[in-house]
Image 1: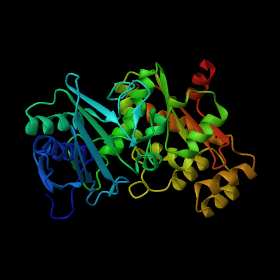
Image 2: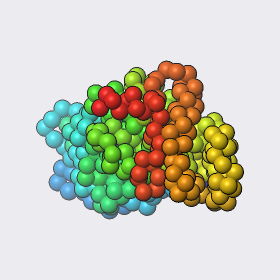
Image 3: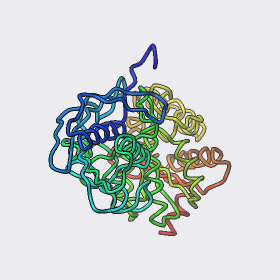
Image 4: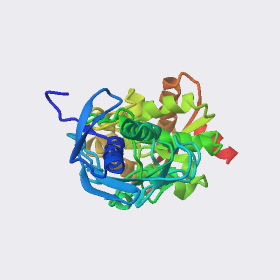
Length: 362
């Protein structure tokens, strides 16, 4: 698939492959050691089947997840599937140990359903029909023994997916170093906020912004969404979903980069914000002796402390305005924007005019 990188396969492919193997067990009384699975990407996988077991009216086996060169937390875990005949119509999906259950509206599957996304469900159904000729009257139970612990390292908890991981994938293939699945998880946050009826969302790069915001302002937990480095992407998607306003909150070390036009703020692709701040402070009439101190600081947080020492933190209000204006231009004025900045101790050091307007509505 690639000369440079090793591709892997999704948890959805693992579940579909295990379901196919179990279907052979239900049909023939024996599960093969491996099966071929055609993915939505039109790539055929050969998957080894583990823990093969056939009983009275049921069969079960597992597939070990392989992520290739992609740094996926589920790499190496086993996706177990048990299928058994039932008296019902169609196929029923059941979440067992380590597979999450959806508890909030706005996600790809309804509230109360196992967190098995639509494409994996379709792949499982096709696997059953390929072997058995039908998927009617079949219960499909999916479990991941390590799933509850792995879920703590994902966004599932904040999305209202409890007790385990999600079975996901749109192509069946994990593309190495791809950010697609991470972006999907970010979009789930927007969808949950929209389904909850929120007119505005708070986008924060990470824990500093989220903890700071919840410390100082009373907002619903699902209204605050971590966007990582994908500022532009999340602004675009917020506009698409029709939110009335977006508040951007975080440390100036991240947010000030927007003034330079960096709406993907990963450090390997976006230079530190020190020079932007120094130029802004010079333009704001900060004395040369303070500027020299600022220029000697290796970090933006150090610059914050220098400004605090000289009682000049008020200058971060105008910087917050500049960040707001940069974001407002980015979305072509299609959505209201506000900005709030926190230091590393989660203290508020700057707010924009748009943020003050939003705050009055709370």
